[in-house]
Image (cartoon, rainbow, N blue to C red; front, side):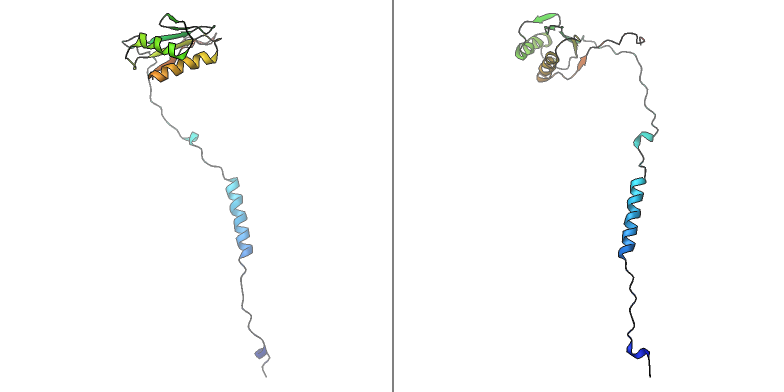
Length: 143
């Protein structure tokens, strides 16, 4: 008589779910602790440029705004503070030359709105070369 005859062979089964849990936990640990390389670590040699100022053949047009908000275009006062009047005054001075450089000189105490209005008028007329005039801070070394 066979003792093993009544027993079935049990199939061995490997449970993969705990293995997957362990692997996902390790993956999350390595992702969280990895330091990513930043582009700032790259060494770049920048091109050199001379510090001398280039002079244009044509003088730039100057738009000046004083502390009270009065606007001057090339030493001519714009009497009406509206944007349309300012655009007319700029057109009288610049004519059809939209490539001319413009220097905006605004007092430090003037309202921000006056500066934005002047910049808006210049932008609507198509002037793209706009510079804001500043002075170096007191005690700064001269270039």
